Length: 578
Image (cartoon, rainbow, N blue to C red; front, side):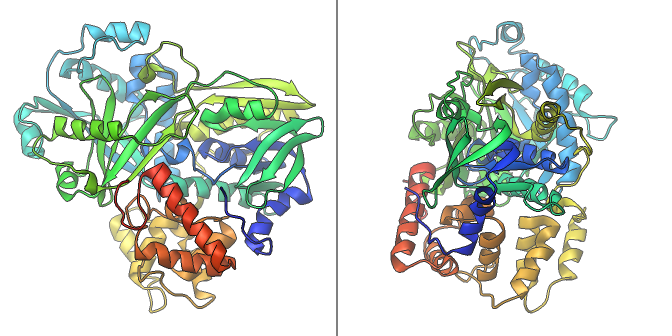
């Protein structure tokens, strides 16, 4: 149950007031994942009066449960999805340029244990989209795929070609890898180390785009679409429980795997979706971290599923599963999936032991895939389409499919369709447009050090500046102004967060709950740093900033404990797996 924040909290009141005070817009977007926020930004940049609502927090669904990859989708070649691969690599390369504060180059290595395996099975996979008998892909098949991928991916040589190493060179580079590795193939993609913050940056850009026309771009988390009638869409504020009706010419359903459930709430049931569940674990495991050599290890497991092991800062992310999901319960990483992850680690690194007490975080999400009958989950298209209908005087558009890497392109296509319905024209393109704190972000490690050194002082030392730069990009300057404008103190003695930064997140980023801070405004939960004494200290600071009573603070702490235990399998008291 959501905690009922006091009605007098200014940030809580302002969050929804912009919608309630003028309950109409040309476009209403339902869903605050990366595709919803991307479309919001694109339409706001065209000067369209647009509003967005999200039933939980921004980026709290599949967008926040991704594998943290920005990739061209080499595996989609086997599905024959060449258009999607081409679009994906264009968008990947674009994001490396426009969001350098969050999107980084990712060197990806495939360990290979045979030469010709999979050659006979590959045509069957391509033609039928059924996995057939599980069989590892050998060097010949991988070489063929990477050569095709290079032709899409390099774009005039800006991305290095793939490289093959033989057995001896592979074992020298990866001494912990299986002794029978015959080759390793390395190619280049990208990763997003903080997808939640990138989503917030895109949202911020959309709100900023309408700065000269106040109130024409509005967004609120914790607002649910609960119905639709002749007067418009019925919205409910999940913090206060209040309901109101909002009218729009175009209503866009961008709720991902919940698209059918949202349409049912809007009194127009559909059967578009057939999402698959993907789970991940995060390990505090220095030996495994070192064994990756700073690269993503990407391979096909013995059951034919594509899985990955790769370093994220000082942690190791391991994933992912690809299981059909019926959406009747919230996705959570199961014991069976954890066993599967341990098995796949041993498949590549047989000498490295992994135990459950090394898991600091788990997360699961449901991919927004179309219904797919008997097609194997791994072969369901990751492409997207738009379904349109007329309802109660509005055009309702449901988005089926889509993936993280292509969010800008999807948003542009969807915005173009929406502009056509509204009789409006595009005035600016988002291709090549910097996102938030990416513009002016230092290009090298030396540049990062110089940027920090130029700002560090007794009030905000270099250690804090490093955190702020990684968290906000060059928008760290704006946050620092807020930190300097009042008395500030570190929370729990950690350089990760201070009371003034917490105030900034509440006032300017709609942080309503403790898990908003720990999971989506910072990476503390992902890194296993949200537990024990720090959690209690954060609860004290959060309650003071929000003006909560002792009872409300206790209720919020209980809510956070439940979220972490039930969704992420973490005990906030001990930091151990539950």
